[in-house]
Length: 258
Image 1 (tube, helix red, strand yellow):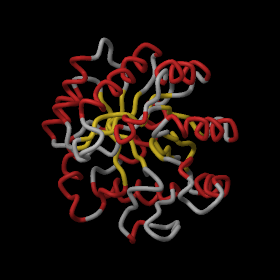
Image 2 (tube, helix red, strand yellow; image 1 turned 180 degrees about the vertical axis):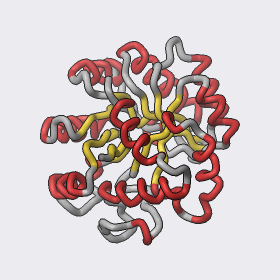
Image 3 (cartoon, helix red, strand yellow; image 1 turned 90 degrees about the horizontal axis):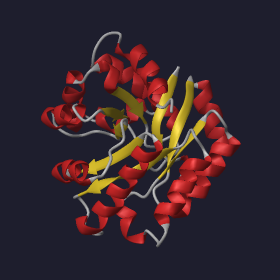
């Protein structure tokens, strides 16, 4: 029994009907998933999947930092309404990104902070993207009028020192199959040091495809199938600590219980 804590089934990049992929996920023992929006234009697509697959697809609505400059006037109200319309929804994918030149941090930060405040005010989990912007993330925590009690650091690639600071703020951390590539060995080392009950698994499908040896469900052209979570979980369990896998599976479900 597994739970994919982060994917983008609404993306349209799979070349396959979503229903077929969900059937394959279920056959692989995956009991549900959080589908994350990245911009307001795909909120309805995420909502439609949650309606079509109730109890399996859990929607997350938000504006990704790469699209912060496309936020239209009144987006905060519309996000609030989305969250109130479904008590099992969460806020995501949101965050800060210093890897991209545009939009700049002056555009990303206010959009991120407002979404964090909405997550806190509605009592929702928040999924955070952070790339080369750790100090900006902590600055956002200080500037926000409120911060959610539960938040997930999606595909966490930070240091053990950063993880320790985030743990004190109540963070959870998700591991994606991309980190099984040999060049990402340092990330595995950080996860070995994290508390077992703060680790989740994700695919980030259609992105973050694992190494070829861990791809059981192939969609071609580097597209990641969410059913690959089973192989990712098995590999992660071998690479970290004996007995960790079963506890991670249970954590995945409890973390998303709103």
